Length: 395
Image (cartoon, rainbow, N blue to C red; front, top):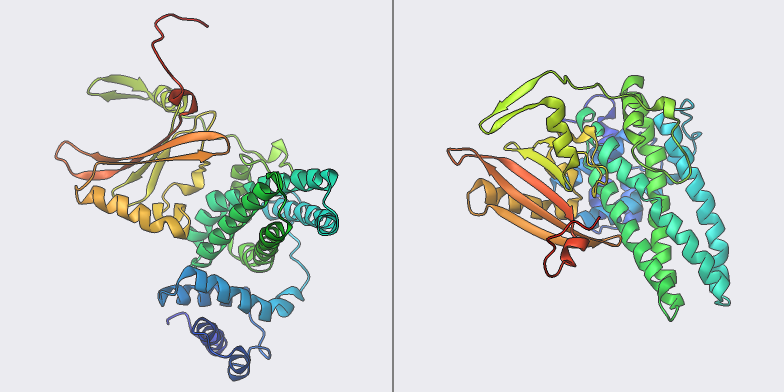
């Protein structure tokens, strides 16, 4: 393990051996004593190395998540002792911390209604729970921001990035448990036991994520990113609607306008660059192109995009653009395209009231060489409902 160098070598080795011991279900108390965990002051960076090594050993992500909870439970006090980071006002981390603060206040307020529901279930209590949990679910745009802006930049900057797989999986756990909680709230018969189970899981994972953001990721980001890099991320973040903060307009940078006078000749015609961009962005579909090296090269930007995309993903490995649990499927599609076994793959899902068709097409050149994959996503609810013929204009 080449990361174990200089003065940090023994400290990181001890923490790694402790974590691997947890993964192997060894006695926790004995491990603490053996590796002097409680007597050692660790750095946030140490944890990143430990998680990377656990993935190298090919432990299951659910096992790693469970062991990571035990690890942070032990390290909570020492990571929680220093004052919380205090980024400059009107910076990316400043707004994200404020957004977390707003959520924490809402979670505390919602606890009052949860206690009431465990005493006497009433229409008013159910109504308040429904309203609050809908807001908490919408807060997951905060996680989508991380997945599309912060994670890609961290991957470019840091050596150890497997921690992001854990965090993304926790994001999905929160989404799943919040949706299940709302499903229980909206059901005809309110099952308090099931509600307590899923709402508690959501609370636990939300607080877990906040701690790891503010005590692990953010301190390292402040050390490793230049102000300009953080400002660029802030500008990208303006595309996401955060629940408890609004990024001021003056923090949003204008993107550089393309050269409208540059024309490209195709076999079937010629177009100016701005015309090409307008065509892509006015198609009623989302397009994303990944090249033969599995790097994201392009995405269209229609008015009503189904899945969020930001410029931070350009050049990113497509495997890193999906949660860990989906990577096997992504690899299966790409490998079948590369081997010439398949030319397309289709999925359809219900998403927030929309019915979405997601298609993947192998892109090949005239010599049939694989050049990449084109992802096409389309909202097809209205299309699915079409019947008969329509031959007249009836605006």
